[in-house]
Image 1 (cartoon, one colour):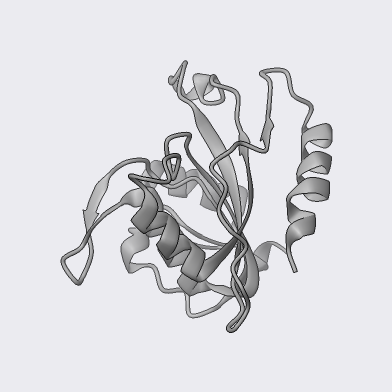
Image 2 (tube, rainbow, N blue to C red):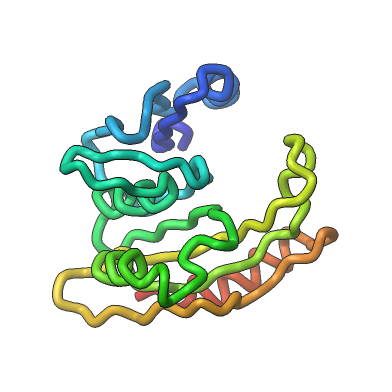
Length: 178
């Protein structure tokens, strides 16, 4: 039900629209860095801000999309699933992104990634920006991590069919979840 939906949105206008569309959802108009809903989730789905450099409490600098992943690890139940839209460049180089890939592997199993059409955000005024959806499962204590793969598992064309794409994702990526 709608009351089982939780969300955090910093942009006031986007928050108002979401609250209008989903009045019974548990939505908060605040920065994700201070979001603390007091509940753990089976699923976290998001499209965080990209490539912002954030300083966190311990003085570490972190990209916003990486922070989102670490926050999701705090909020997910063991075995919970995260689906996140990120730039194609996120975790795309196993040499320069080695530290982040290792940190992700300590908290998650990697299930796979799907390349979105280059014009996925054209209606929002961004005619060309490469993005992908990554799927991760929060690790359960004591289990062995499924290794991260840089390769794209599936690419969506500009005229993709939602039903076909979701069936492929369910069969080939989410079926990997324990």
